[in-house]
Length: 275
Image 1 (cartoon, rainbow, N blue to C red):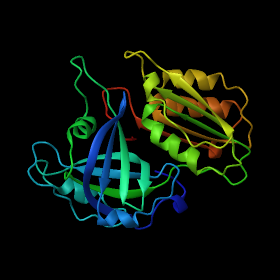
Image 2: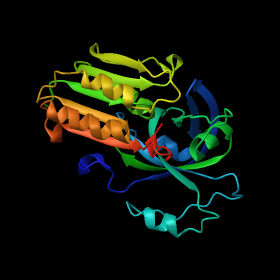
Image 3: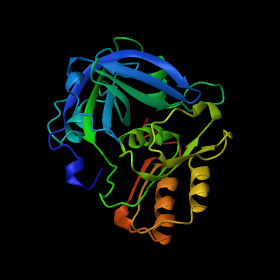
């Protein structure tokens, strides 16, 4: 969570809705679109606006949510019996259309040896259909670029794709900097609304056995010029986030000008904030 209180909603809103559609957006990404009357007032702030997503597991007949008040959501959530407690995962707004009250969520799909999707969220995303219930708890932003930043550096693996895209389209058109974006396959590239002064380096892994984030970290370490007046946003697999921050600080960027977040850890754990 962001340490800057201005980026975090004081009274996080809970938005109930339902699935509109689920489509394979690219080879490694399943995009789920949700809507509902409440989404017409979703306070989208651009950048890496994220939320906690709640959805019903396959064995559950009803979609049960606890009373979520303000920031105290964890205790009532855990108080629900396990057999009715919905799944909760953290995701970034991939796109939002207030005129139709539709919000897009991108799920990274990792497949096992048999080709089946792995992880509760990816399995749900690939199987869900129109009418399935969902709920989103607004969590605000992590991206916290100082007003005096001379340039911006964004580094992410595929779990940070929505955040990267949101940051680029939200930056001032006069911004300068660079993006290092790792993806599993060439087909996962997407059109980006980036300022003219921000370059994008796509790092294609093309190796199902490689640890996600490793290639992006290697590319970052080749990025030698890091002015102390810049700002960096490094997200994705835990090692990419922590080692990326360490490299940038050693290269001269103050710690308070680096936002880093491990969305997930390559130890069998699923995504914590992605998508």
